[in-house]
Image (cartoon, rainbow, N blue to C red; front, side, top):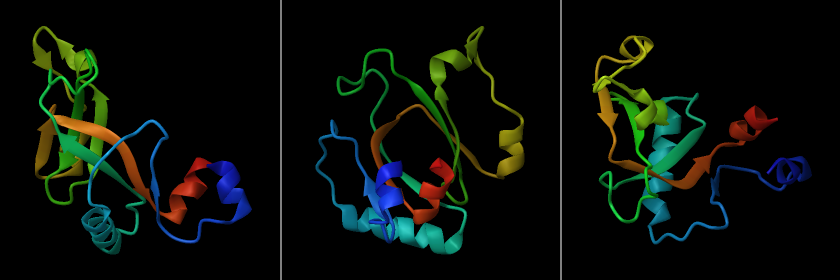
Length: 128
């Protein structure tokens, strides 16, 4: 990706998909949502496409359970961690900073990262 950026061939937002991903989805609504999010928040440099898939579903990798925290107001990703690492004594421990980020915190273990991302040109600068 750095080599492609250095060559200057990327001129606008782009979709980043690893070579081993197979998906059947409509990109137009995702691109429109990314654009709207970007207009509302200039710091939104990446839109990650996630799909609701229950933990333990056959399409998930064995043992994979991610904890995803989103801002209820904006949908901004605040936390993305291995959920099994967050459990101690049957309780879920969250950083208190999450509560400072938003008035409406959404916690999910049913969101699956499709590894499809919509990126802005600024994202490339962050990778350098």
